[in-house]
Length: 223
Image 1 (cartoon, helix red, strand yellow):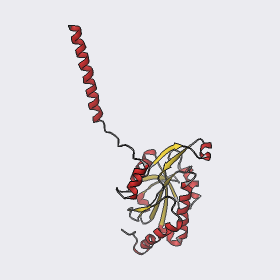
Image 2: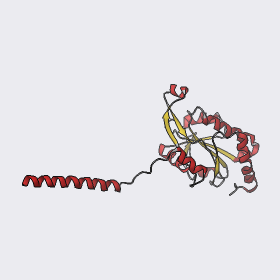
Image 3: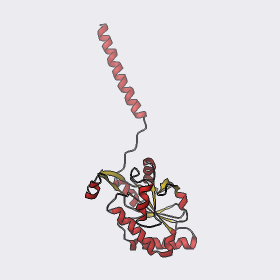
Image 4: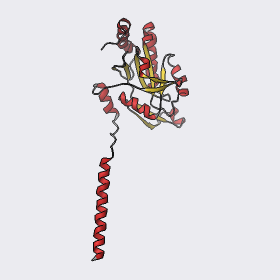
């Protein structure tokens, strides 16, 4: 009998341990699951949630920059990475062409390139890259946590994938799938909208010219 009783106590202790472990699991804060590219795209396209906001990052000269540094300018914010071989160069060139074609009005526009590959895109890596496109293009990087925070604020999807481009494969690196929107942010830091990936400079100019004209006459972007 004593042997049976000890086995029963052992079984109860084991069951109690499982119950406590289960209870403890529920007490641990659970991380929200990462949203897919299509889910985040849906949020941006239908303006389902607030987009944009404050940030604090490092520019291509190694200086700490915040969103407040760019008040009074219309921002064109693009997320990408310097080893991108297709979409990023095309969209950045379109942004640069747009600013140049706006003439003096283009001085009221500030283009920002925020990396989604902060491990590789350090300030020394960013500096010559942004210079390829426009002298006023500012590259921004930071810690992985800082990049994740700003990408989350803009509802930007990014994820590393196996390199499929031959040039990327030869560098023994990875590609990064990422959102390709150009986000427009007003003079007071307010989110205005977006331009889809691959937007031609002509269309960008149609959208942006009225905004910079409003800045010239009133000092602010339209509500």
